[in-house]
Image (cartoon, rainbow, N blue to C red; front, side, top):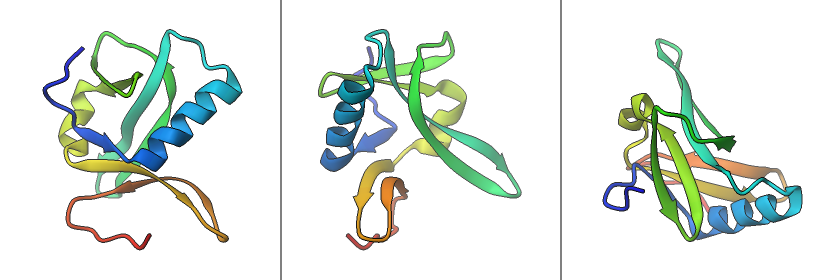
Length: 105
Protein backbone atom coordinates (compact mmCIF):
# COMPACT_ATOMS: atom_id res chain seq x y z
CA UNK A 1 0.00 0.00 0.00
CA UNK A 2 1.16 3.51 -0.78
CA UNK A 3 0.74 5.78 2.26
CA UNK A 4 2.96 8.59 0.99
CA UNK A 5 0.65 9.93 -1.73
CA UNK A 6 -3.14 10.13 -1.58
CA UNK A 7 -4.71 11.86 -4.61
CA UNK A 8 -8.20 11.90 -3.07
CA UNK A 9 -8.85 12.97 0.49
CA UNK A 10 -11.92 11.70 2.30
CA UNK A 11 -13.78 13.78 4.86
CA UNK A 12 -14.62 12.32 8.24
CA UNK A 13 -18.34 12.36 7.39
CA UNK A 14 -17.73 10.51 4.11
CA UNK A 15 -15.51 7.97 5.87
CA UNK A 16 -18.25 7.29 8.44
CA UNK A 17 -20.78 6.76 5.64
CA UNK A 18 -18.43 4.43 3.71
CA UNK A 19 -17.92 2.30 6.84
CA UNK A 20 -21.68 2.25 7.51
CA UNK A 21 -22.42 1.13 3.94
CA UNK A 22 -19.74 -1.57 4.09
CA UNK A 23 -21.21 -2.95 7.32
CA UNK A 24 -24.87 -2.63 6.31
CA UNK A 25 -24.48 -4.06 2.80
CA UNK A 26 -21.96 -6.76 3.75
CA UNK A 27 -19.30 -5.62 1.27
CA UNK A 28 -16.75 -8.50 0.92
CA UNK A 29 -13.37 -8.01 2.61
CA UNK A 30 -11.47 -8.23 -0.70
CA UNK A 31 -13.37 -5.17 -1.99
CA UNK A 32 -12.32 -1.58 -1.44
CA UNK A 33 -13.60 1.89 -2.14
CA UNK A 34 -13.08 2.82 -5.79
CA UNK A 35 -12.82 6.52 -6.64
CA UNK A 36 -12.53 7.50 -10.27
CA UNK A 37 -13.75 9.55 -13.17
CA UNK A 38 -15.88 9.04 -16.22
CA UNK A 39 -15.17 11.09 -19.30
CA UNK A 40 -12.45 13.70 -19.59
CA UNK A 41 -13.22 15.32 -22.90
CA UNK A 42 -15.16 18.41 -23.89
CA UNK A 43 -18.15 17.51 -21.73
CA UNK A 44 -15.99 17.52 -18.60
CA UNK A 45 -15.47 15.00 -15.85
CA UNK A 46 -17.96 13.04 -13.80
CA UNK A 47 -16.63 11.64 -10.56
CA UNK A 48 -17.45 8.08 -9.53
CA UNK A 49 -17.44 6.28 -6.20
CA UNK A 50 -18.31 2.67 -5.44
CA UNK A 51 -17.00 -0.65 -4.16
CA UNK A 52 -14.85 -2.88 -6.31
CA UNK A 53 -12.02 -5.41 -6.38
CA UNK A 54 -8.46 -4.27 -7.01
CA UNK A 55 -7.26 -4.15 -10.62
CA UNK A 56 -3.67 -4.41 -11.85
CA UNK A 57 -3.84 -0.78 -13.02
CA UNK A 58 -4.82 0.61 -9.60
CA UNK A 59 -3.00 2.86 -7.21
CA UNK A 60 -3.86 1.53 -3.75
CA UNK A 61 -3.80 3.31 -0.40
CA UNK A 62 -5.52 3.02 2.92
CA UNK A 63 -7.31 5.39 5.28
CA UNK A 64 -8.80 4.39 8.62
CA UNK A 65 -8.79 0.73 7.66
CA UNK A 66 -10.53 1.29 4.30
CA UNK A 67 -8.62 0.28 1.19
CA UNK A 68 -8.99 2.84 -1.59
CA UNK A 69 -8.47 2.08 -5.29
CA UNK A 70 -7.80 4.70 -7.95
CA UNK A 71 -6.94 3.74 -11.52
CA UNK A 72 -3.50 5.16 -12.28
CA UNK A 73 -4.79 6.88 -15.43
CA UNK A 74 -7.35 8.78 -13.29
CA UNK A 75 -4.89 10.06 -10.66
CA UNK A 76 -4.06 13.31 -12.48
CA UNK A 77 -7.77 14.26 -12.53
CA UNK A 78 -8.27 13.47 -8.85
CA UNK A 79 -5.29 15.17 -7.20
CA UNK A 80 -6.58 17.48 -4.49
CA UNK A 81 -10.21 16.33 -4.74
CA UNK A 82 -12.06 15.63 -1.50
CA UNK A 83 -14.80 13.02 -1.23
CA UNK A 84 -17.42 14.31 1.19
CA UNK A 85 -20.91 13.29 2.24
CA UNK A 86 -23.84 15.70 2.21
CA UNK A 87 -26.97 15.10 4.24
CA UNK A 88 -29.69 17.72 4.16
CA UNK A 89 -33.43 18.06 3.86
CA UNK A 90 -33.11 18.37 0.07
CA UNK A 91 -30.64 15.59 -0.71
CA UNK A 92 -28.28 12.98 0.65
CA UNK A 93 -25.18 11.54 -0.98
CA UNK A 94 -21.49 11.67 -1.75
CA UNK A 95 -20.07 14.87 -3.20
CA UNK A 96 -16.71 15.78 -4.66
CA UNK A 97 -15.12 19.05 -3.65
CA UNK A 98 -12.46 20.62 -5.87
CA UNK A 99 -9.55 22.71 -4.60
CA UNK A 100 -10.45 26.36 -4.30
CA UNK A 101 -14.17 25.68 -4.55
CA UNK A 102 -16.07 26.69 -1.45
CA UNK A 103 -19.02 24.45 -0.69
CA UNK A 104 -21.73 25.42 1.74
CA UNK A 105 -21.93 23.01 4.60
